[in-house]
Structures are given as C-alpha cells and as structure tokens.
Length: 169
Ligand code: ADP
Image (cartoon, rainbow, N blue to C red; front, top):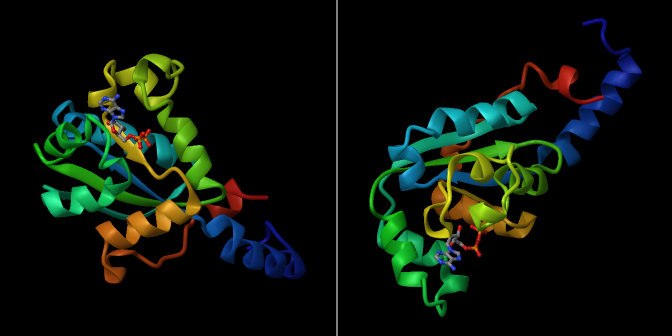
C-alpha cells in the first residue's frame, strides 16, 4: 500500500476511528419500496462514498413505529403517519462516514418534497409530505437512538471499507 506513508497511515487510521465513523439511520418508506426506489436511494449513499453498515427489508410493527415517531405523538398527522409507515415493507439501513447525519439530511431534502431542491431524493421522486419516500435521522443522538431501536448489535456489520483511502484525505 503506497498511497500513504507509515506515519500518514497511523494518522489516517486514527481519524477513521472517530470523525469518519459517524452513523445515521436511513429508511426507504413503504411508498419508496413500492415505487422501486430502494436501489436508487442505496446508490446515492454508495456513490457519495458512505459505507453501508446494515440493511434489511421488514414490515415494521406498529409499536416500533410509535416509538420511532414518539416526539410527534401530539401532531394531527401522527396516526396517519404510523398507518402509512406500517402499510408495507420498509428498507431500513445504517450508513457510516464523515458527517453522515447532516449530509444524509441534505441528500434527502426538506421534509416537504415541494420545498426540496431538485437533485435531492425527495426533490426528485415525490410530491406530498405524507408520501415522502425516505427517512433520515435529524441529529447524531437521534441516529444512535434510532439505530438501537431498529437493529440488534449483531446486525451491524464490522468490516474494512475498501474505498476509504480514496474517499478520505
Ligand atoms: P423528517 O422526516 O423530515 O425528519 P418530521 O420528523 O417532522 O420530518 O416528520 C416525520 C414524518 O412525518 C415526515 O417525514 C412525513 O412523512 C410526516 N409528516 C410530517 N409533517 C407532516 C404533515 N404536515 N402531514 C403529513 N405527514 C407529515
């Protein structure tokens, strides 16, 4: 491996263990799955350079969704939201990399797709806020809570990301 010197390699390895190991929870919602957008959403995170740590297709139990969205329990759209999210399989994922929580939100676009810029996932593929095809954690602490809620520890894959030296400086 001649891309980095030994000292650079040590510094690189340390950086990789902290800042570049941030994780976020991304889910393709039932409308995104039905509309054939799982591959497209995975593709965008893959091509950006993020590392896929976990992924599974599942019909989420209502109790899980009520917990996931508990901060919205007093909103008028809450019960419709839980019904929508339980209406079919979702593709749940964990992605890892530098500032992936913030960048994931940017890649998704605004909550309301009609306020999402073209080029974002919601800005390119949907129209209504109640059918906005994907979820992404809104903060690092939220991501930790959501990952623990949706995944068991042994579902998170620990492996070396082959591209890392070409993605990070
Ligand atoms: P985000 O998913 O962008 O973090 P929120 O946490 O505010 O947004 O809302 C969670 C989800 O609830 C949204 O993604 C959307 O599916 C749904 N939602 C939010 N606002 C509305 C609304 N006014 N009407 C219907 N559904 C909504």
